[in-house]
Image 1 (tube, helix red, strand yellow):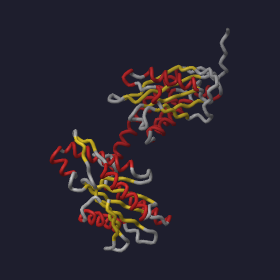
Image 2 (tube, helix red, strand yellow):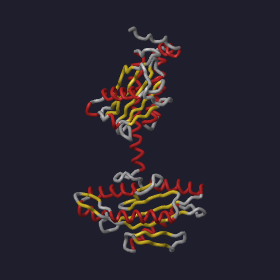
Image 3 (cartoon, one colour):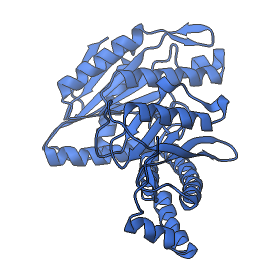
Image 4 (cartoon, one colour):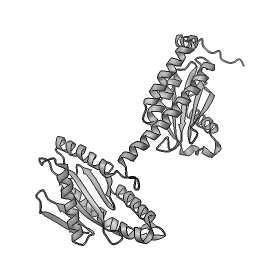
Length: 366
C-alpha cells in the first residue's frame, strides 16, 4: 500500500527552510534569551515546547524533567498541533525514558503529565505523528531529563529542525540548571538551613506584608510563638545525644507544625528551639483553639531521634492584631513573646493569650 504523500510546505515552512544561517541563529538566540529569563521549570518547559512546535514538520514535542528540576517529581511537559492521544502520550514517555541512562529512569507510573496542548487529550484519537529525535538534557554533575521531537503530516522534519532541537535542548539545560540554582539561592535567603522552615528575617518580612493586607481587608492576624520547654529541650538533647540529634528533633518539630496548620499559614524557626506561626484571618478565639490543639498534640507525640523516642512540650504565646488597631509589627511580636514568656514562667506546656492592653492576659493549661 502506498504511503501518504506529505503536503507541500507552508509559507512559514518555506520561510524557515530558506532562511540563512544567521537568521536562524538570531531566532534561536531570542529563544535562548526567553529560556534564560524563566525562573521556574514550568516557564522554561512552555518556551521550549512552543518553540519546538514552530519548527517545520514538528507536530508534537515533549520534555521529561527529573527531580530536582521538577519539584513535584518526574514530569512530562508535552504539546502538539492538535490533541495528544493516550497511546501517543505513552509512546512519548517510553521514548523519553529510553533516551535516559537506565540508572536515571523513573517508573512510568510516577511521571506527572502536563499537557500544554489547547485541545484536551482524546483516547480514541488517531495520529500519524512519529517520533524522529530525542535529546538528553544534562550538566556535568546532574541529569536533567530528555526532550523529544515528533513530526506530523505537515512536512517531514529535516536537519534544520534536528539541529534546532539540539540547540534548544542545550539552552534549556542551562536555563533549567540556572533556575534550580536561583531557587536554591532564594531558599537559602528565606529558609532555615536545619528545618527548611522560613527563617526569622523572612517571617518579619511576611508579617509586614500580612499586617498591611489585614489592615486593607479589615481582618484579624494572629502571631503564635512557641518555645520548647527545658525538659527535653534542644540544649538537653544536644548535651546528651549530640547536635545531629538536636537538628533532627528540630526538623521533626517543624514537620509536625506544618502538618497542623493551614496552607495559608506561615511557619518559621525563630531561633534556637523557638518557632513562630503567622496565621492570617485568624481571630483570638481561633488562634487560641489552634494553639491548644498544637500544644496538646505536641505533648502527646513521640519523636524518633538517635534510637530514642523523645517527648517535648512547648510554652505558647499568642498575640492577635485586630482591625482598627495600630499596625505595629514590633508591638505584635513583643506581645506574643511576652505571653510566651509568661507561659514558661507558669510551668510550660500551656498557652497564654496576650490581650490588646499590656498586662491583661488569659490562659489555658494544656
